[in-house]
Image (cartoon, rainbow, N blue to C red):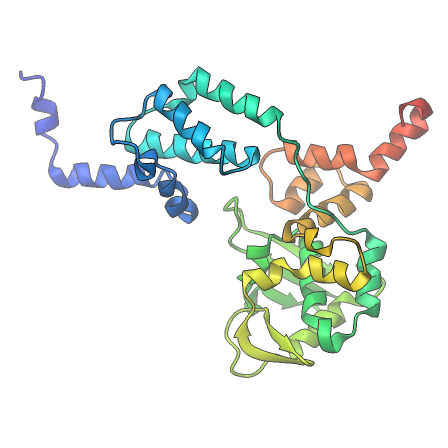
Length: 306
């Protein structure tokens, strides 16, 4: 039998379906971003996927991007090459060593967070006529450890009024795991549920499905709020409170603040993972290590360790 007989016996439509199935190995949400990382689109040839060429590629990429971005690009490139070329660059020892050396030079900058007293001060003192939409975004973001895109694409049907609390569903998350959280009346020193109800009551009849609508002079319009506006929620809060460098309070800070507050209240790893929608325990462990309650517990057991 001819060595190629088996390949010739496979119908073209099956090969096509196999190719389509292979492409599903890439995250659907990030496919376009992943494809942009292919070296051939950066001036390298189709067959230029050797370790030497990729070392040169990352050497040049490092000139334009922070070291923190290198591993992200490496991960995307690894997935693309494995799917499209059958090349496993995780076996390129020199390349991974080069990236590790670059990582040592980089000190992670964590998003600034707000303490509970600062959040409550803003909710109490900021005038609703100007800041109601910001307040509601802050409440939901902190209550549910939400990412900016999760708040942006939240639908009005995802927020259910249960009387003494709101049940909020996040159906489409980064980790593809739907989750939900509650907003309780007593979550803050102000009635968070009533504040959200007030914002919902101002929705025009012609408003679409999106929960967050543009808010101007005490009224909601039919225009959806974009992700850039949502991501500035924390910086607006910081600016109102007169905190230094309010522009450094990013959208991710809202999520970090939520997890930090939960860790400070004694939340364990399982609770933190469920709250943040994480599969891994690594990130949750970092919040517990950094939490005030954890440090206080260590200090009480061993004063010298603090």
